[in-house]
Structure formats: structure tokens, C-alpha cells
Image: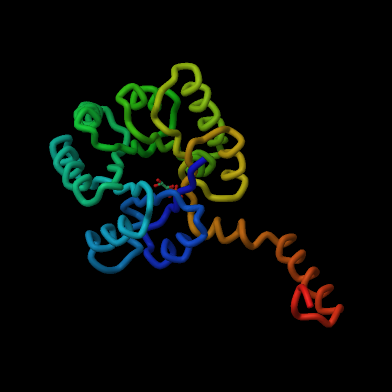
Length: 219
Ligand code: E4P
């Protein structure tokens, strides 16, 4: 399973890359709006920092505009994936881009049938949003489970990228459901490392070791 960081913050990406567990990054316009500086240079820096796919979302609205911008985004770096929101008018564009071997991540997927349509087009990633379903009191995890079954039934190649992950339960359930990728906010990764029992355990080992009055493991 691949783990992506869901952020456009270079400092946070720089902080987590050395752990060796980050396989890519997803950005979106809302995440970019939190950053200051030149957007293009932020995105180029992120692409250079990360040894894996970096999703960059189009902001154009017309199909022609989306097509042109997708081409521009994809030319930024080898590891760029163009993120395009699900919409009927964009399907011909997505179809054309996949035929041109441009890697696409279709975002804002909220149903199995939406996912079926874009899987048929051979996109690289499909991003079902868990948290936003939960926001309106629907269990978003059901969608991930359904997508995994669809992929198994029909052998689609598109990777299921669990997105809008807000808590550790979302991440754990995505692992168990068999999502190909989970994109997680850095704050969540922080929580995984700061598990209270792990922290308590480290403290206990330290204090027991100190009771021996030793510093080195071996004399
Ligand atoms: C990632 O690709 C999505 O843009 C992101 O996970 C959305 O998360 P949110 O619903 O918490 O904004």
C-alpha cells in the first residue's frame, strides 16, 4: 500500500520524507491557498523533493481550458499526476489525456458508478473522499470497500486512492479495505507516531534502564 502526504506545505513534506514511508503527495487548490509564495515554484520544489507521484489539480473550468492546463501541469515534472474533478464534460478530456499517456487522478469521487466510468478510461488514480461523506453522516468507508470489489471483479488497473482521510480510523479501515493508496494529512501521521502507549513504553524502558545506572548497552 502506498502512503501519500495530503499537503502543499514544503516544510512538512521535507520533515516526513526521511522516514522513508512517503510514496507521493497530493495537493489541491484549498491546500495551495494555505501556502504563500509562487505557486509554480512551490509545486516544482515538491516534485523535486518527492520520489513518487505528485498530484496537481487543474483550476480551469471549460473542457478546453482543462485540457490545456492538464498538458501544462504534466510538463512540469516527470512525477506529476494531473488531478481533474469528476464531471461529465471532462470525461472526453480525460479520455484524450489518458490516450496521450498523461497520468490522471480523478478527484471528488463519491459513488461507485462515478468510479466505474473513470476506471474505464484508464486513469492512474481514482480518489474517493471518505471524510466528506462522513461530514453528511454517511459512512464514507463503504465506498472504498465497494471500489475494491469493483476492481477485483473487473480487473481495472486504476489505483484506489483513499482521500479526505481525517482520522486514524479512516486510515486503518482503508488499509483493511485494500485501498491501493491512502493520502493522509501530516497531522494524522504525527498522531500515528505519538501513540500514547508507544510513548509510555519508551519512557518505561528508559527509566528501567537508568535504574541499572548504566549508559552503554555493553560494557
Ligand atoms: C486529496 O486528494 C483530497 O483533495 C483531500 O484528501 C481532501 O480532503 P478534505 O476533504 O479533508 O479536504
